[in-house]
Length: 388
Ligand code: SDX
Image (tube, rainbow, N blue to C red; front, top):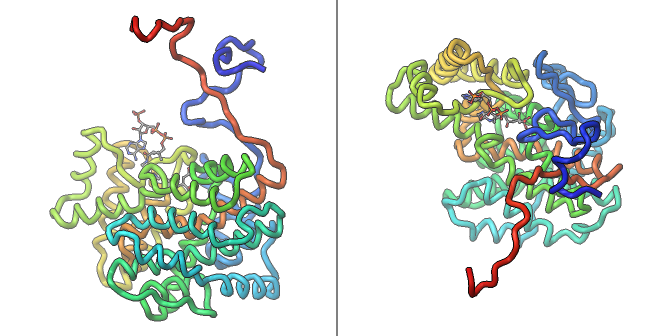
């Protein structure tokens, strides 16, 4: 078997694909979601994201990704009842959140707490399919509780016990704010969860599948995925978008000039560009409408106007389209969420995709192990240390 050193000398018809950042490389087959980067289309298990956003709830999408079909009412009732029964945290994990530094980034706390969940799950290392489904349910049900509890603790408030009723969106907003959300806020938040649930082999999903492909456990794989999502080139971009909008507002800058100045400095404008989409991310189009609606309801149009100005400027100056993060930031901000929580909301939703991908990986597993082209030194001999 050729090792890395000889990869450059393999015959051309067997030469492996070499693509920086694995751009365009097909690493595996998946039936979960597909992105058409040229048409700006996203489907989950054959359903268009616009259809799902308008006609399903997040729990229906979780069931769809996991099982391949949308649930009947009875199947949904059973599934959501089970998820609700798993919302409470093991008390040692709640203690971990109490002891976490108040100024720790919520994504670092989430990564740590999800890893800790594995210490208190008797099935953590079980690899039977049903055990992995049960673990997926626990992880999905407990991530919202972790996020809400830490946010309240860092603000000097007591965590709020999860409800034994209501949707994941309803319960999360209730645990976060200590009061039941209105229907509009719950629906808006639920659509955001639908939009972020899965997205092909993005960096955090790929991370989860690489970890899963070694036959490591679900807690290790989801903790790793959270670590990958945290980065500003991936899920961390939504917080950066809001930081940009808040800075523009604070200094009273003209959004177009602000962006032109940063482009002139060769800076990346967060929330724009994508490895796969060559046109508008369909999720961004849906979220853009939500930013407008929330702005109109609040009677405060500035965040929507800033995004419109930046969108036009980026179109004129670069032709680069916005991605999901450009509009998820102002959406969450107008729902009253703190910007440093935005990426944890992304993780809350994407835990559906990560766990569904892990189940798919384990159904037909092969170790994921790409190659590196060796470009280092060769043919060196060791000089005795006393002569070095
Ligand atoms: C997500 O993969 C997924 O599916 C991810 C995601 C999901 O649902 O899981 O969709 C969620 O992560 C969305 C992306 C969020 N990240 C950002 O918004 C960060 C800003 N965007 C980028 O840094 C960039 O667009 C990436 C990282 C998203 C994609 O980078 P690529 O594919 O490696 O492209 P590149 O860095 O090679 O850029 C190509 C050109 C470069 O110009 P040149 O240097 O060749 O002249 O486009 C330019 C870049 O400078 N460019 C940008 C830009 N993004 C690309 N220029 C300014 N601002 C930007 N945002």
